[in-house]
Image (cartoon, rainbow, N blue to C red; front, top):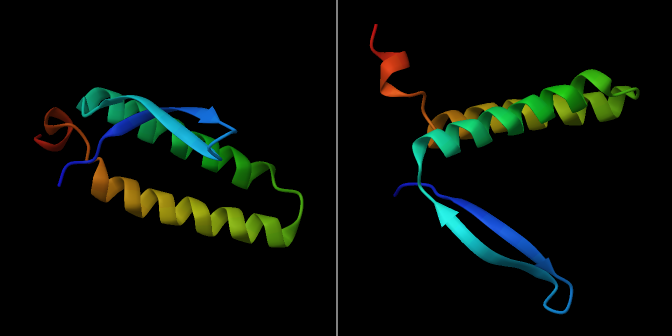
Length: 80
């Protein structure tokens, strides 16, 4: 099964987001992965509370593992 990226618009009347568009474009998925991991690293580094820092570190590790499985590096990067 191949992952896809979905753009959602929040609909408060439904209590959830409505999918507007999707893509399986590998470049878009890699950019999304990079952005998500950058944001998670930033949250971890800026945590001022030890407990929050631990939670943020565990979340970063979870995201790194999961996104590495779902969105591998491009073939050009892996074949050297």
